[in-house]
Length: 265
Image (cartoon, rainbow, N blue to C red; front, side, top):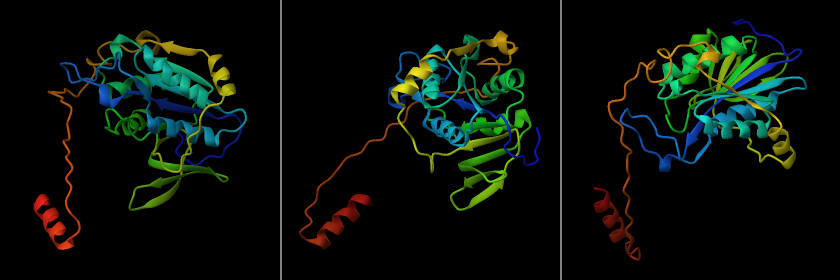
């Protein structure tokens, strides 16, 4: 990829990778430690929605935003929402062979898709992490496999002669010039969410979501999914937090303070 700064000119191609995540209060795992998603209510990952909103915010006339997701057939719902929010086209990478993929196998599939179907992209947008896995590793490894630069914790993208990304690391905020072909992992800061209109829904309903399987992408079954994963989960159990409340007489501040102290200790 070209690592030198470049200027916006002509038609731009933005790729936004998104993930449909299950309602974390209603999920369980199988014997391999993988989330069982079938039959569980799902939503578009909020960080992915932030990434899409950022792409839509810098889109000019003639630019194209491509939303891409890897998952079961039900992930089509997340892509439909992306179309409602402003994406121009959508691809669903769906195949039973993709099931159980860890970060490495997931990124192998995503990078193979990019190289075969959109090798001339200008920028890639990802959410900084997924609400279900929370590894936050996919953007970094995807940038590595594609050989492009990565800009973490991006909260703002501006164009003033050159593309500039504002990154918020908590203790430091910095502005960097980004190059053609780079990847941005987006946080949820300074992103304004909006509700799609009836016109947005009608437009989205008229766009076909293209479905690709392992053969379409050009991979084999031993490089994707559970077979292609390098991470082996030994066990996984949901954590439970028990909380209890207590009421004390606050008419005497000294005694109330002693009660709180004893409860904490």
